[in-house]
Image 1 (cartoon, rainbow, N blue to C red):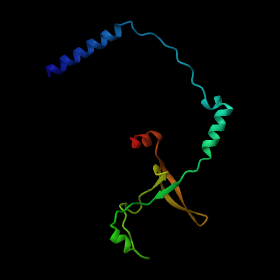
Image 2: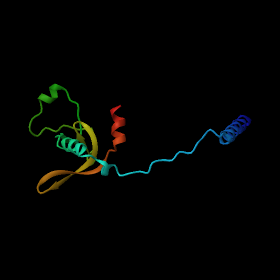
Image 3: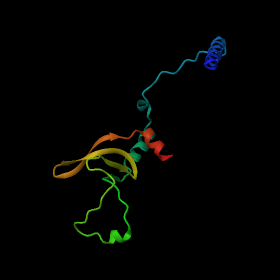
Image 4: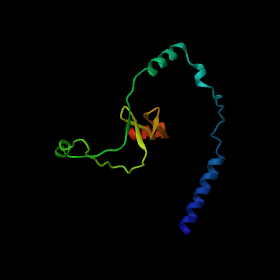
Length: 129
């Protein structure tokens, strides 16, 4: 306990000493601007080019690992058990990268997916490392 008190006293002394130093100087920060307003014609052309690049989007219900022997035995009506529990959200992948989770919906007699959770850019970057 005495060691904790000594450590706290050392921290308090260091903080007081740091506050007393006059090495800091005030800095004025630039005012935040709307970056979209500053886009040039050339940048807009480049952005338009990127926006037209096709990507592959896929929805993954689940995965399973099976042997080639079992794969060759599959036929109509066979059931492959997935690692996911029924009712879990689907993974939405763009070019193989997870970007969101969602649930299956039917729209105009076609299957679709409603996004329920979009992965943030920071989380996607962390997964790349």
